[in-house]
Picture 1 (cartoon, rainbow, N blue to C red):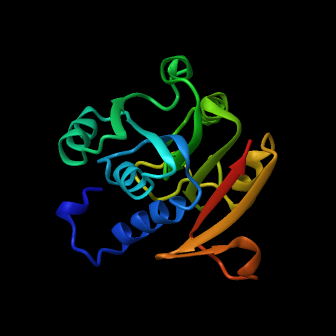
Picture 2 (picture 1 turned 90 degrees about the vertical axis):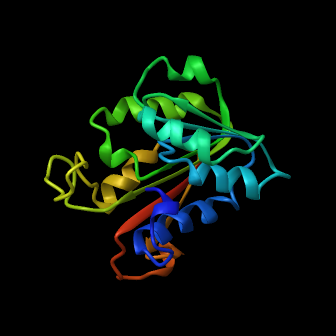
Length: 197
């Protein structure tokens, strides 16, 4: 996703930007943006949280995306690095973070357990994880999306976070993000979890 090459009213672009603006209210200290893509979200976090964020590190597996992010979204508190979210050495290389953001990543990852282990190892005690994913038919079932391994059900999504002290769930449709307990029986296409370690 490259905002500069998209129309301002593109729904997918607006949804992604809305998630980062939502996350702004929760981030502080040293922040990791896992699978940062073209870097616009890392930039939103760094630029809009100068009083609460010390550093934002964007990690992506695509060398092209990292190069684009470095060239397009400079900020003195952000950096972009090449890395694989399931690399077991990543926690040693990057250290620990106060906050980790991972938007639209887990549905692309076959090694889900290693991905979640890396996040947990890199998150400081008391730290905050903000993770989102689209809902679908569940593990092992085709999602219809070319690059998605699968799309979790709502219950599978909620079952990811048992190791955390506190978890709040939100649902998103378009740019609207609502607490899960306020939506009743309405179906939302995407979930966001805010987890305290």
